[in-house]
Amino acid sequence: MAACVGNSCIPGETLQEERQESSDIRKVVLGDGLRCNIVASSEEHSLPVITKNGILRRRKPNIYYVDSYQKRYIPSKNDSVIGIVTTKTLDFFWVDINASEPAALSYLAFEGATKKNRPEINVGDLVFCKVVLAHPDLEPELVCVDSTGKKGNLGQLNDGIMFSCSINLVRKVLNEKCRLLHLLSKETPFELVAGINGRIWVNSNSLRKTILLRDTILKAEHTPYEEMSNIVNDFATELTGIP
Amino acid sequence: MEIDEDRNNKMRAIASELNILTRSDGSAIITQGGSCCIASVNGPLEVSPANIDMNKAYVEVIYRPKCGLPGVNERYKEKIVKSLCETCIITQLYPRTQITVQAQEMDDHGGLLACAINAVNLAIMNSGLEMKFHMAAIHCGLDSDDNLNIDPEYVPKANLTFSRIQRSSRSQNFKGNFTFVFDSTKKSLIGVNTDGKFTIQQYNEAQKLCKDASRKIFDFYREMVKKYATVL
Image (cartoon, rainbow over all chains, first blue to last red; front, side):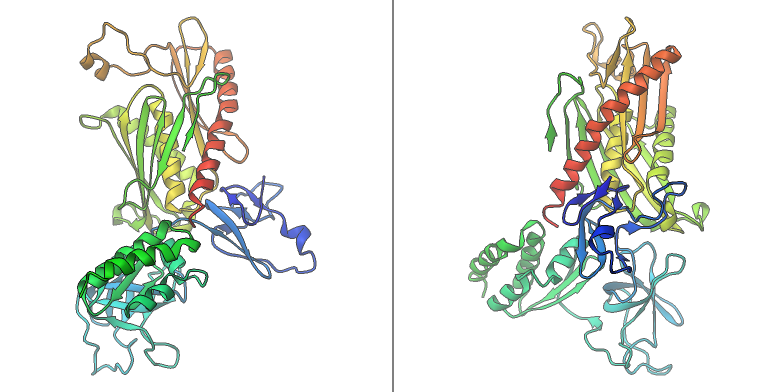
């Protein structure tokens, strides 16, 4: 059986269509949910096989991936994640990033940190960081600086509230097609940090407003892109009651 | 999501819902006729040092009966479901981790093992773990007149009291019981569990009937994927 771009696909189906469609371009990039050679002893072994349930998507020129539902995070390089510091050891903070094991965050991976000048982070604090090492055989490694040593948007998250959601909701909120954040920012000023590991942090000038923002974002999970303005309108009417 | 009873195929109506438990990574409830089962999948999780495997994920299956403590029968079912899970999940992608699968019996009206396997498959599907294929389990009963019944509903005998129904196996009005599990790619047999008395011809006939019937369950899975993919 062969899967088609834009349609639902199930594990075990093969990706066949790129053969005819793009015979001139030889290189095909396989994203999430597609693998080669998982089943040995098969005449179709050279064709990529689908390993997830969802919708097969294609991004030009030749990137294929499966859009599927997921709650558990599997670390991957360059992802921006929100972590909770669980342990402090001599050289590392151990951070829970919703993956199978805690990730290591070095004391020195902060802006301006030296051996003498350690960052003031305690157990239970939230940190927004980037994954620099993600390999299934090793524990993930995080940093709170970019390659130039600046902290940029990364670092500790103070105040506000953090909530967990499905990874799809985070992807949806960050999607360019989704106008939710744009519409919400017209109603009230707020800060939002979305970690692709299924955690979102929001902050505004009052706690009730922050909670209302959280509820609106969670509501967006099962709302189609076109109907985002409806939930924002609901948010606006609720907001009028809050000083 | 429901599929109505088909008179020709004589399979019971199937209904299912995904993601019914908020805190697990993947969960599903399925009813096949009167039998009902909830399954939940968590993983990849941190694994205890005793069970760690450097090459693949360790799969743990917990099967819970409707009432009472799990016994030998439940352990046996756990073992069957565990080996099936290890076949259908690509465990090599998640080394040094653990995948916990839980199946909770809700109601038993025959074919509960098949119902539990189908529920576990839907829960794995919902959890986003990478799979090689889907699996579909079908129960078949051989009655005293040597007729094969695909996915039969258990009808309690009138003279049995409630407590006796509770204790007796729900498949006991058949002299032979088969549960076949098929994969979705080649429709080949990946698991089988039988009890009772039957001949090899009856076994082969039952396998053929179940293989035909498995198509309906695979169609059902596909519909579920399609339905739950609309909000992605």
